[in-house]
Length: 360
Ligand SMILES: Nc1ncnc2c1ncn2[C@@H]1O[C@H](COP(=O)(O)OP(=O)(O)OP(=O)(O)O)[C@@H](O)[C@H]1O
Image (cartoon, rainbow, N blue to C red; front, top):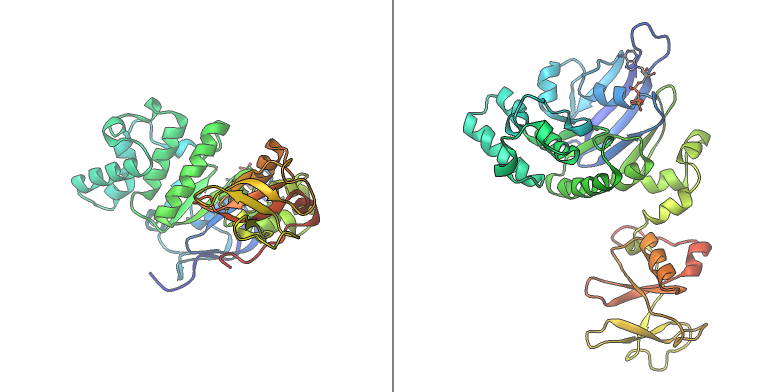
C-alpha cells in the first residue's frame, strides 16, 4: 500500500450518458480519506449510484480521473479493479442458485484460492457477521431473511479483504427495526475491519448515524456539500442543502452530539462540597461515590428535584429523554463507573450547547 492518506480521489469526474445532453454527474471532485465512511445522499436521480459505480468502473466516466490508494485506475482493467473493491447492494444481491458459502467464495475463487481456504474464509466471515457457519453455509439465499441475506452480502464483499467497500442502499429494503440493528452491527464491524466505505442512502438519519462525512448531491449531479454530519445539519452550504436537510435539523443534531463533547457544568459531591454551596450543584453519593440525590441546588429546592443520570457515552438526546422522563430540569452526567462528571441543564439546550474538541 502506498502512504497516501486518501483512499479514493475523484478528479473532475463526469458522466454524460449516451443520448443525454446534461451530465448525470457533473465534474465531481471528491476525496475519501482512508478508513472513513462517506455517505452519498440526495434526491432521486441526482447521480449517487452513478458516482458509486464510477469508483469501481462498473460505469465508465466520460472524463476525469479516479485515483485509488495513490494509483490512477481510470484506465486499468475493470475486472481486476473490482476484485480490490467490495460491493454490496440491496439485500446483498446474492446469486439465488449458489449456496451461502459459494456466494461468499465468489471473489476468492476468481483469485484462485484453493477450496479449503475459500471454505475457511466463508466460515470465518459468516462468524464475523453473526451467522453460525454450520447452520447457514449450505443454505440458499431464499432460505434466509432479508437481514440475514444482507449480512451475507457484507460477508461476500469482505471475502478477499478489499481495502474499499462500496454499498448501494444496502439496508434500503429492510424493515426499520432490523435496519437499526444492522446499522449498529455495521458500525461494530467497521471498528474491527476499518475499511474505507462509500455508502449510498436515501435516509438522512442513516447518513448522520453512519457517516464520518456526508456528500449531499443536488439534482443534476452536482455535489452541493461535503462535510461531517454535524456541519451539514448546522451549516447547510446553500439553500438546496438547507431544504434537503429540512425542518427538525436542530432536534436531529441532539441525537448526534455526544455528551463527552460538551462543556458540562461542574458538580460537587457532599464530602467535597463543604463550604462551597453557592453556584455548584451538590449531590449525595452512595458508598461507591455514585450520585443518588441532590443535596444543594443553587436556584431551586434540592429535596424536591429528582436526581437523574445519563452516561457520558450518551448523546444530548439521551439526556433530554432522561430529563423529560424524570420531570427534571437538570441531569447528572456519569462515567462508566457511575461517577459524576458534570451537569447539563435544560436551559443549556436553549442557550446553546458549548462543545469542546474531540479528545480534549
Ligand atoms: N444507464 C443509464 N443510461 C442513461 N441514463 C441513466 C443511466 N443510469 C442512470 N441514468 C440517469 O442518470 C441520472 C442519475 O442516476 P443515478 O441512478 O446515478 O441517480 P441516483 O441518485 O442513484 O438515483 P436514485 O436515488 O433514484 O437511485 C438519472 O437522471 C438517471 O435517469
